[in-house]
Length: 140
Image 1 (cartoon, rainbow, N blue to C red):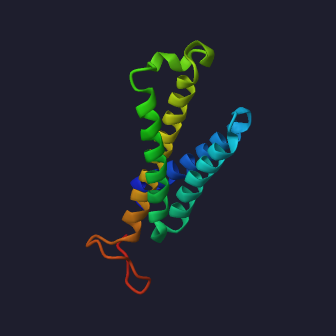
Image 2: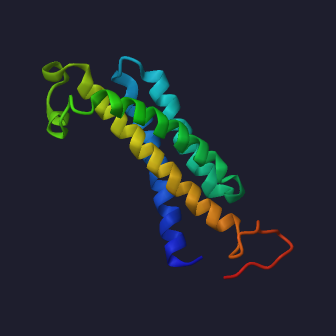
């Protein structure tokens, strides 16, 4: 495996661990289960792509779902909340600060899943864009 392949694999593993940590941190959220499911789903999709590159489409699905949800949330906070509001108490700006934080987390989940899918797809296909087969030798 080339060094860039190892770096991408390591980044995917770190992303999966970050998703698990994000899910664990939802214990004090008013609606924790949808966020736990979202972060665990994104992390699981990245792990599947890491372990079985032929299933590169799984993190694509997770990226599409989280990106769509993030876009919906970003549309509600655009122009209402500033980046500097992230460090303020939510009571100072209302629920929009929480929505901005949620949108940021979903955006990171979408990016991480997209990168995991890209890595897996590159491994799953050869230079000609054809699926790799076990009976064909692979380039080192």
